[in-house]
Image 1: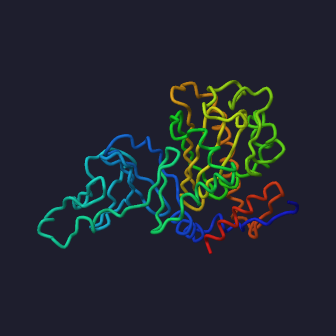
Image 2 (image 1 turned 90 degrees about the vertical axis):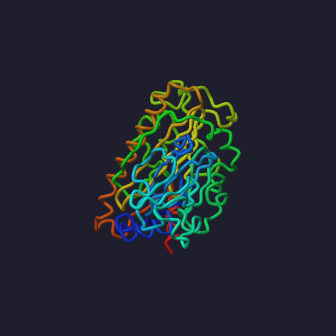
Image 3 (image 1 turned 60 degrees about the horizontal axis):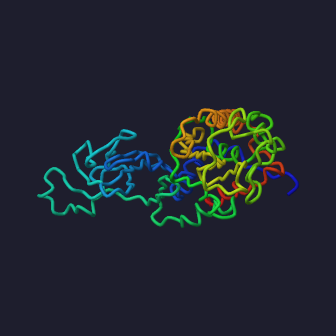
Length: 361
């Protein structure tokens, strides 16, 4: 593709009304990744997460299943759980003590026996659609959620060519080696756009381009289906100084060895695949100019030496998010009122802009 392509206008990154529309029409209607299933290890373990404009309560039941509910009591609307995580026997509203089983049914309330019109099932917690995939919990607030296979797995096929290529990494059975949270003072779309392109890599990622030399040419690993960036000849592993990392994951195919693959699962997940570990980012947009990014480094069980592997992409994250934060103020400028331009190697960002526009329409 040749020629310059117009971007979104600056207001798309700053206008609170645009942000509200994105919350309603994108994040509250799409499948979003909200937690690692292992974070809810035992019956009664709960976590509260933000999805769009809603607080969602995740809890593992006594039957071992994870369920999701809107974090709102059905009596007078009080928030059920105010802590980010914990463990309970039952879910009890701290306002009037309406009490729910871990499966969401109303099981007790003051004077409940004298109120036959209060139905235990009809007045249970509001259920949220939930799927588990890659060892993570994904939820969708829509009454009729889109097909998970089309919306989520379809993104994998669009990048790797088939889901089997991802399954070789056996992500579900990897262990969490490190988790870092980044509070980024930038619009969520700037974070997505940054991850999708490597036109900036030679400028701000010296460590990354040492390991992946083709990134210095400005082409991202997502620029055609099935492409993985090759390691440098002298790089023994995907580490900050090219030293050897952990042993190769057992299921990796020969053509996946010594290569880095990147997948954007819209709207808010980035998957980074290398032979010995997987890095998963999940974003939560909090305001037009603020995005929380949680980054997990996942390794095979038993791997304990992870510092060099973590340090490489932690530096990449810090460099990327600083670039996004430098860009956010420019979105307010009259110089960017009508937007900017994408160069040919960034053409896939135009497809992302089209995807956003379609959903806002």
